[in-house]
Image (cartoon, rainbow, N blue to C red; front, top):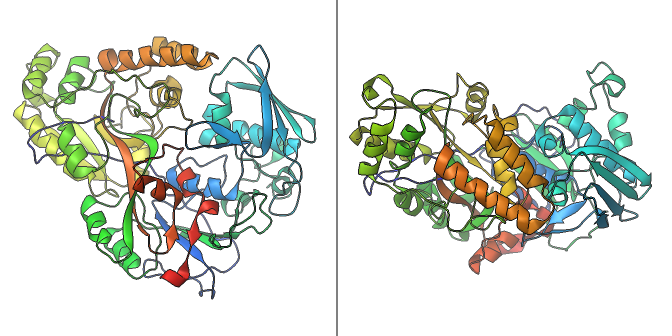
Length: 560
C-alpha cells in the first residue's frame, strides 16, 4: 500500500477485501439476541459468548473461502499441521515434527496421536491427504498456494504424511498454516453424488456450506445467511481449556457504524470489525470499559492501477499518480497507527527491502511525469475512474483528497462507489476493472514471497488480490525462481531485487500504508492476546484470522 499528499486536509482511499456470501442455516440454537440482528435465537443463560462483528458471512469450507471473516472461522473450526508463532516462525500443531530431504522436494510430517475431530474420529494421515487433494481439486480459496507446487501427498502410515513437490518451494512449511485438515469419512458421508467431481460427487461442498468437519477449538452450530456464524466450545480439544475461555463465538455480519457503536455500548458486542471509521473508533473509545486494539496481518493498503486500461496503461502516468497522494496525512489522519508504506510489503514481513524507494506528495514531480506520458497533450480525454468500497467509511475521504490533488495536475478523477461483492465482480475482467481500485491485501504466508506471488504473478489476475493486470511473463519467471529457492538468505535477496523492479520500473500500484488494523473491544472484561501485546508497543504481525484464535482469549462476564 502506498501514500499520497494533496493539502494537509486531503485523503486517499483504502479498501479491504472481505467477501459477503450466502450461506444457509445449520441446526442448534444460539445465544444472546442483539440490536444489530434480526430473528436471533433465544439467549442461552450463563454462556460466555464472544461476539465479533465481521464484514461478510464466513464461508466455513476451507476449500472455498479465503476472505477475512472466513479465515477467522477456519482458525477456530479447524487445525493445521503447523501454527504461526508471533515471530513469524511455524510451531508444531497437528504435526509434532517434520523433516525435509536434501533435494528440498520431499517433506515428511509426523502427526500427534490421539487428536480427535469434532465427531470423535481420530485424525489420521489419510485425512491430511484427503484435505490437500480436495483443496487442489476444487481449486478455490488457498488452493493457489499448493497447485503447481505439491506433486503428491501420501500416507506412509496412520501418523506419517509425505509431501512430494513438483519443484522446490522455500516457504512450503509456512503455507501449511493454510491447509486446514478435514475429516475424510465425515465429508464423504455427506457428498451429493450428482456433483461435478467424479467419484467424489460434489466433494461435500453443499453440506459444508453450513457444517464443519474439523477438530478446532469450536464447533459450528448455526450459520445464517447475511446474519452470523455461531459456534460452541469443543470440550475435547487437544490443547485443553482455560476456565475463562469463551464458551461460544458469534461472528456477526454487520459493519454499519451506528449499529456497531450501539451494540458495543449495550455490551451486545465484544469486538468490532476493523472497518470502522476513525471517527467511530474515537467515539467508541469514550464508552466506559472500551479500548482500541491495534494489530497487523502484514497488510498493505493498495491503490491498484489497471495497467491495461488507458490512461493507467502508461508507466509514466502511473508514476505521476504516485506523486499525487499525501501519504503522511493519510497515515496520520485517516489510518492512525498505520505507518506510511515502504514498498509492496510491510517492513516487519521477512524478506522486506529496507532501503526501498518510496514516493511522496510532489505536484511538480507529478506534472513532470505526466509530460513524459503518451497522454500529455490529451488529459481531458482520459478521465481516471476510481472505485471505492461503500462498506468502508474512510475510503471516500482518501478518494476525495486524491481527486482534488489530481485536478491540480490537470487530471479528472471520477469517483464511483460499490459494495464489495460488486467490486470483486468488476475486477474479475480486465475491461471492467476501473483505473484505480483500493484494496487491502495481507500476506498468506509470512514472507514477502506471499505478496509477490498473489499480487504480481499472472496466476492471480482477475482476483480481488490483483486488479493491476500486470501479466508479465518475465516477472512471473523471476517470482517463481525466488520462491523456489530453498536457501533462505538467497531467497530473501531475490525478493529484494524483485521489490526494486516492481516499485521503480513497473509501478503497478500506489502503496499507501502498512495497515495496522484497529478494533474497539470490551477491555474491561475481555482478555485479547494481540491487544495485550499492542499495549506494550508490540504489534504482532501474524497471518490473517489468527489474531482471533479464540481458544487463547478469556472472558470475565462478572467484570461487565
